[in-house]
Image 1 (cartoon, rainbow, N blue to C red):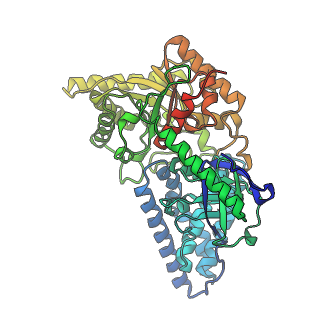
Image 2: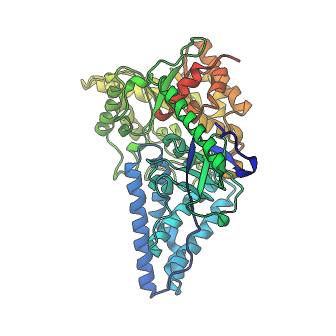
Image 3: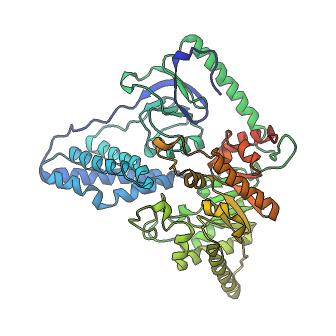
Length: 538
């Protein structure tokens, strides 16, 4: 919703990244102080840097431990990098020659950030912002300054906002994000949408000319900010906020209703789950089931890989929460931007196109068998389905089916209760979507995030190509429509579990493409059901 009745020149236009309207004081993120440390002895400076790295790692691990969704995955790379001694080698070499710890660390990280940003491979370009986050986190501890965090209810204005900053902020009193850089498809934008924090990116502003505590109006859906609102503009904006609140309350009336189109056609609406703690305060009656459970949380930050008993307990808990509704659990989707120590391949030239997802699981069948056994046991508790990520060729399904069938036979022979769950796949590789009839799966779930990335050849967290990474691209929608159409003709269930499923802009396009089962973050359900209720075929 764009605020009305305001002078056009008062607004600065960017790109919408997370919907919502918010008014509040401006908090301008200033560049961190650089080179202010005075060098002590090389031994003292080296000890300072080691201590700062340890403190930064502990702070990020603390954020990971309390994260209840994809945030934990986003921070995993930072923890791995800080734990790699090679990261600080250049800094320690400079310290040995008499450079202060903060200057040495900054110079060493700036070189690596530049190398990542200029890399030919998109994966490494996307990691440049993570390295910037790491650099600044360590600098804060070295310089003894407070973190650059806005007060509750403020609008954060800066060049970019890194994941650890977002996760450290208190959004309970409102607030928003306005960036001169950034991307609507970045990790922070994803987190903002999941938490209902309005966000605008790509603003053409001089940050140095802005003042803290100045009043500002942020229109997340219209993609703009007003940094000098008049009394008339503020009053009109408050009217739009009230209307938005009324509209949100109207959406809530749909939350506990079955989703139906204006023509009365049923559309299944499910939720995505990244960790079981997310379910603690949710009523299963709001959804038609769980369309995606990410199991990576079981493998991250553990002293060893999870055993069968621990996996079984978690899967069973989730299935029981659903109270008879279907639960789709994705097998380990490691690799790419989700490395797991001791399992993921290291030093791949292009991890997004490397040994990841089902490829990695089949490369380690003994580990994969443990997960399949736990899933077969948990399937006794309710309608559990197993989904394979990153499937590229049909043989990956048949190979997995053979492992699953073998483990079910072994469980039965041992007298352990189990059930052979349906085996389906994520459709996120264009080669799979283009020849979907080749794949012997019990169901298909379209992963719109990776499918869009691969079809458009643009990473979702790189600002310079963010405009290309759009599920509304006709080529992406055509593939989605072909998968949905084939499923309908063949009598095979098709769902969509990527971010697009909860996007009010994209949902009508998905419905036009034939999708009738969408899975999304729980916070997106009410609005999505409202959009569905007002949709008619076009």
